[in-house]
Image (cartoon, rainbow, N blue to C red; front, side, top):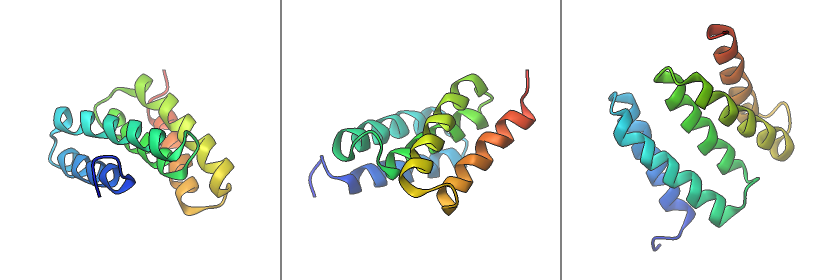
Length: 108
């Protein structure tokens, strides 16, 4: 498929998810950042896959206790998901719940 294909971004995202599940956060973060950049470049800033990448990077930051880094990414992901998928789409609901959990569990 070549280096510049959306499936490459999906593979980067999936490998990052594996690393995150293993607690290898420093290995996961650059892959998630690269997948996000690639998806924005190839699919556009408001594509649902961009929302997925934002959500996944936010979740990584959340799991590291980097709440101030996670919240704006969740917000951006939610805005994209609501606009492109609708408020009741399962992916939108997941992002909304992630943001609500972050805010509920980590209020200043």
